[in-house]
Image (tube, rainbow over all chains, first blue to last red; front, side, top):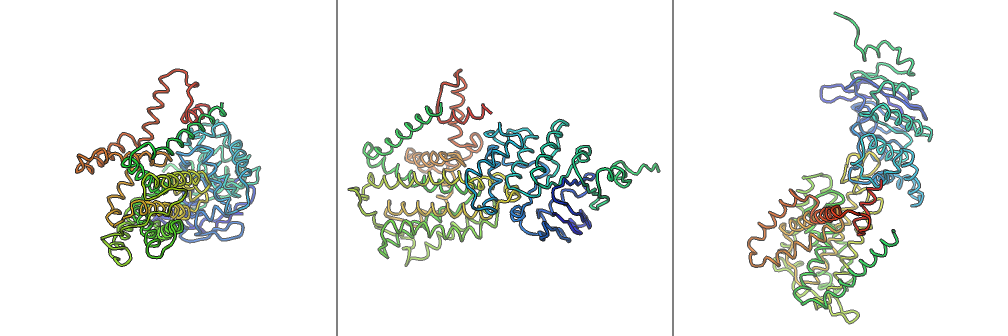
Length: 243
Length: 338
């Protein structure tokens, strides 16, 4: 569904991503992990064209999307969230979700207002914010804001969600709830690519994982394979050599 | 409960409507004139609020677009004998067109840079008007702009009769902007104001949304300009200076940016104030400046925000909250309930 092919990105002298390739299959939850500064967010930024890759290509459903405008990418069916959760702070929860539906007008011009309203209700229920509909978004807790951001992304009716560290700053209970939410979202036929620090959460939910270190892909496989990969262990725990 | 509230709201609206309708009968010519000026500026400032308050783009070009509306309407009616309603419409089209042109260039910039580019365009428009005497009368302006033709026994050369045109115009503009921001495109405008980058990534074509907002707001500025010209029956480049642009901005900010009623309050306040301060006219700009600083420091939500917070304080000091019903109570209860 999503194919990342030989993507490189440099910032002046720094090679933030070098020659990263992988493929995400439809209907899966795909993890991207790696130590701080490994290039995980840069990868998302290249996919959604926050900035274009220095070289390499990105394909979505067989079509090249490298370098096309961010809102066009969302129209095609990819929506991302940001590392430091972003919502529209002065709008109510309800209106935040409504802004996500703007793109539907390009995708499906014939949709009626009733359908739009029903969709908002369904999404609010799904992300568990239906009792907060009139709350101003900036008054929500961090965890709720993250779920709202996912709600906005769902309102765009994305086929592929890119989530950048959604569990950051959450307690274990909130993280568990979030993972359940992501499973539910996947049930609806949405493919998810997840950047995450919480190893336990990633291992529990992802079918496949890519590991980045210093901008390079050092491993790819099922959680079990990743757990036993010596290079990954080295990246996370150090080499173990006592010099 | 909600039915009760609606009935109260309706009767309040009816009361306001009656007061607004009888104003010219009760008040003298001078007061009606001041109110008419307020009305024209409500239209203009509400249009500015669409781009500044709701879309978050600080435009100084509005005075120029206002001027284009005023001149287009006057020239069409005087030189080409176009009927009033048609020239009103065409002046909106002209302003929208120039707004589109200005927007195409200026909206490539963001924040301060956008403000500076629009400032330049506002001045360019004024200077072009100043330097085209054959068409615009140059620095002398245009005299004896005809009043709209009489209808229903109303004689629009009289201020108390012209009042009704301005009233309809102002109400229509305010309702239009209120409707606009309720639509999905309107929500997208607010999204652009709140977080433009994020808006792009949820599929909002922020450039298009800003262009729509700027063009619509230009059309409304042209509408205000046309009414201004036919009301005062005289226009000159000196009515459309940068200083006026700053005054418009003050009206939005002092009234309450990004609200429907804020700019109305701001326009009323900043037009009434100089009338009250006629004796100390040379201090006008100093007072305006001080007001702006004080507003930004102590009441960032403007006069409207100030009134709301006073109202809330009064309400919370009385113990049983539930019995007091007003327009504001509704919002509060919702947020308490959630």
